[in-house]
Length: 132
Image (cartoon, rainbow, N blue to C red; front, side):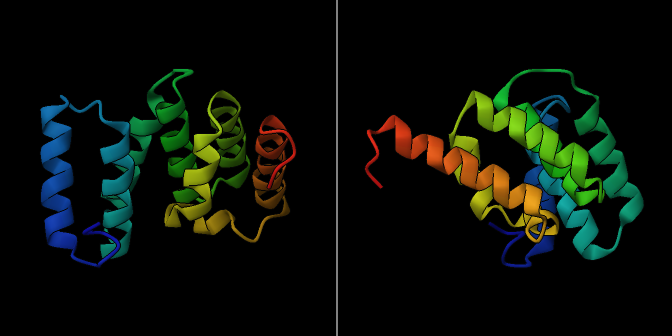
């Protein structure tokens, strides 16, 4: 929330505390802290956090989702789309979050992003018996 309100000092404090408590394995906090670093112009620190996010090998939806964020922020859209597709395949909730997550803004104009969101939206409609 601090990041979206451009309150970068508080965002950095909260995210760094979360990372320290999680013993540096909090992909969500790392990817969000990277977004703050990008916003304040510290690309070197952002890349260090993003590299840590991308190192983890997992089929966990949260890990895949935050890796997709990392690749999105690093302007690697095909990798981001692939990871997001895998996350959504595991849990349709990831699609809902991706629709509203501003860290995917670099992907918003891509047909692949729209196709991914729409394909999974239709699958959700089909799962509830065709009701919108």
